Image (spheres, rainbow, N blue to C red):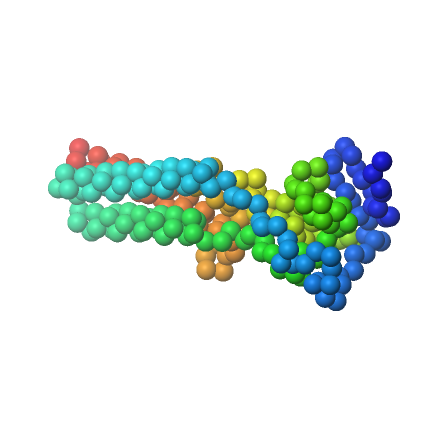
Length: 241
């Protein structure tokens, strides 16, 4: 029979351990004094790199193909329609090049920027919950047979969750462990199967966090390029008739 922890309620249906707000977990003064030292923690879970690579390669090829087709279509339409005014043609080409540059910049930022992954440190890894500590001392995997441990608080923003895969404490709200990237990510929105990256963060522009700003920029560039091509095509047809 499993030994119940005092003050811990096990919800078998959801396979979670929920610690009430009245229960406190005190941080020891020196994390190295514990039976398990920070340096002894197992490595972070292995990413599903093959799947991430195939997704990002497909997404990069898709963006490249769409950008190339839109640029060629715009240039071809401008060159063949000699009767088009020079000023609108120049503006159209400049806008298309701006969308293409924005798409490439956002693609690079999306693939190589940090979406907001939780990093290990002694401050976030300790204290280790008892059931996790027992697994580690036995040399067993903590990702099997255990579920995340939730410490409730009076306000949801102060509630914490211990991820049994990353082995760290993280806020309960707006944090999620991605099964593909194998990392806990803050302000998580979704894992993009097109670009092979977690899409997370909030805000757009230089002040935005995570890689959400690059994802939004990619969408804007794509929609803007298509809209410019459609409008420019309609203008060319109307002027040549």
